[in-house]
Length: 516
Image 1 (cartoon, rainbow, N blue to C red):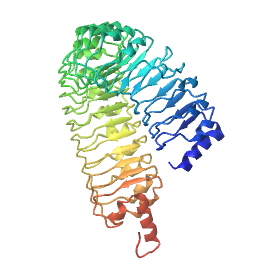
Image 2: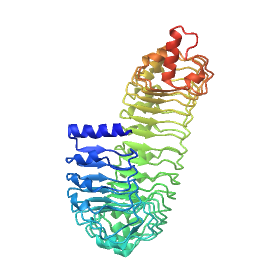
Image 3: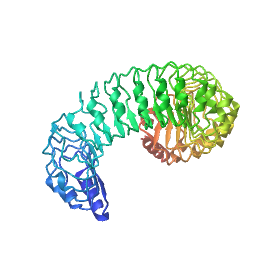
Image 4: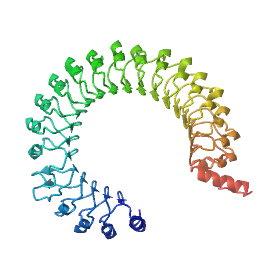
């Protein structure tokens, strides 16, 4: 953004007395002086710039409650933050701060502080009992600064993306913690004293090196969210059944070969992620998790859709991608609350005729299967907005597909279509149509009916001509025609996009010898 545009944006805030100003990612090396005239400003975003200092003039913005200075080149903090008495959110992440020390000033209302520094010498004075959230993520810390354990009032602590191998017992002094994020570290085990944090409701231990979960963790009976994904777990303690308040459990990317029966006693679970394990089946008792709304079993080794799933009638999202499924049982269509269903990367050759019972489906992914045709029942899914049929073996589509009046995105990449089905051209609400990698030799003039089309991919086909009528698609902003033996328009023009194609046909219709 040019200097003129930046100043115009500031002027707009001034004239309309807006309370928010976003100057992020503008390559600023200093804050424009006009900003300091906006005394009523409440939110100021200066992230992703090249600031090396913050001038004292910022203290004129006495109404600031949120200030984002992350992703700049600040090497030290100014000593006048204490004058911004309304400041409640301060983001200083990803700068070049070397350390924080006691001389750092006090800003008494700060509730959320995000820091990324190389060394904490002492507790910054702007972290007061009113600061309930401290973010020290991404600092490459090998140990938690001892000063942190003096912040006994802290409720949320983010220590993710560091190099922690252990958690010291002193953390148990933070008895008010309700959320702690220890993900993306190098923890190999959890200390028992972590369970003294009895107010914890959210515990994130994802992407560490845990091989087991200590039974003591089951004493954290207030937990509602537990993330253990990306570890090396082969099982769970039976006592996990004590965590009766759990609503979200992430066990993705571990080494589970079976689903622990004990999980099925966690009847308050609404979200369960078991993807990227080595599951070949799930227990029948899974059907007891009647409150599940989201279930992810993708990237396992299931040979069939577990019967227990068909009883989970509150499911709204179900992911079964990348298994070894060869069919979909009719019983799955009992899940009438499903809005998102992913069956991609399996070996499906057909779909049940009762598929039309999934009337609330809005997103359906059937890509990378072995479908040669689609059942007419599929066309009755009138609420479907996204349908992905990439990499199947379709040679045609059912004529009634135009019944799917809510469909806005249709992906037919890498099939065996030799022509654009006429029924598709009657789908006037489609905005995205992908036909890349088929065997198309021509486009019908009726494609001009698709008045809402904004994205059209026809690359890697056998087209020699694009009809000039395509220029009537006034909403079309992206078209891809590469790797076709095009003659009209020439491929070098077609590859420049829709504007170049429109210009080409305008010149051609004007009778010019050399349309461009």
